[in-house]
Image 1: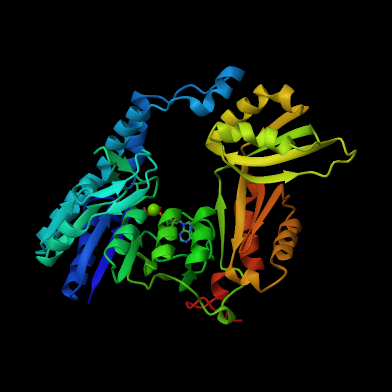
Image 2: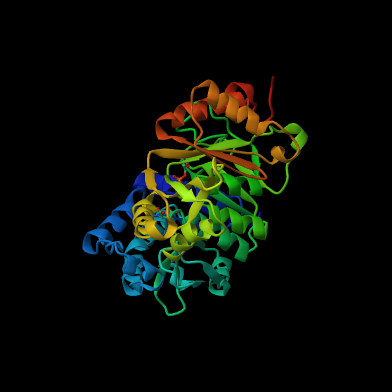
Length: 436
Ligand code: ADP
Ligand code: ASP
Ligand code: MG
């Protein structure tokens, strides 16, 4: 018995039947003697619809296409009012499910109260659409829980210091749940979703994906930031920092989920824990860039000034000591702006030609075992070469290796690597240990 946070994602509250099913899980936890705080997402598809409506009313501002516009890019005032008004629209999806879930609980005889982010309040920064949680006031919530009511809280939203509604970035209900669990010192934070745990790879892409009994915070953080959207990246960072006991499980089945843990016994686990991918990368290559000190700053400085993040970077060896090719990736949504920005300063940088390619994907292999085992990268490169898949860019961190490949090869690459690292379902038992 204790205090648990149960979070239900979009597909788990997609319609009234789903909401009733989720409410029965809450009812069971209450019957077991727990105090329960429920966090809900909007119904599946709702947030996309709300965002689309905002864009219909107010299309994004035209991109800068001149030198002058570009050099002003960093200081161009962002229309904060528009962003704040859009957040008021987008946050409404969670308001609906929050009220419906509280009603469904009442129907089951479980006393419940709905809470919007501003009612607690969950105070955030005023960076609308990607706000950060600053603090959560729990006094009123705890008082209400003490009366025996379940608290149903709208995920994904908070309130800025000036009283305006904010949202926390896509997938942000995970963050709401984990932050509440941390603030309330909850005994557990259960993330209910449409898969029954964290798998070695997205089970919707690779049929032989294996469910992991446990994954470390560190691995989950790398997996989430490299594309595994089963948990939002920032939610994992907060869980890791605040030691929130976290579990991912299905709202549709009763199978055991995946625990996100601090450490695991490395002897018993695979060197590679999982594979991830992201389609949100686009590649830019600048040919024949003068190979002189400061050239990287000349290229990436203006991109940073235009708020464009660069991910992977590779610079080829200069064949003549005078010029080199520079390849890097940016978010797909930033590609057009990046190309415009660089073309505007072509003369200044002195490159000969720019080519871009949006039909690429980044595939990553992740595992804390990489620290103590050699050969993980070699296995990856050999397996991809064997299938004739060309690696365009490589980047590494202590527990992750990422490669950029043509989008057409995504599924083949994931299946091939999954087998190469011995992760296929029939080779792993439910504890995540290798059988053969
Ligand atoms: P929710 O709406 O419940 O927040 P999401 O759609 O955000 O659910 O996340 C669940 C989805 O994450 C799954 O349907 C699955 O396709 C995807 N996913 C990606 N990588 C993984 C992984 N390694 N393990 C499990 N699911 C994954
Ligand atoms: N509804 C929001 C989204 O679709 C938040 C969430 O589901 O976690 O991104
Ligand atoms: Mg999600």
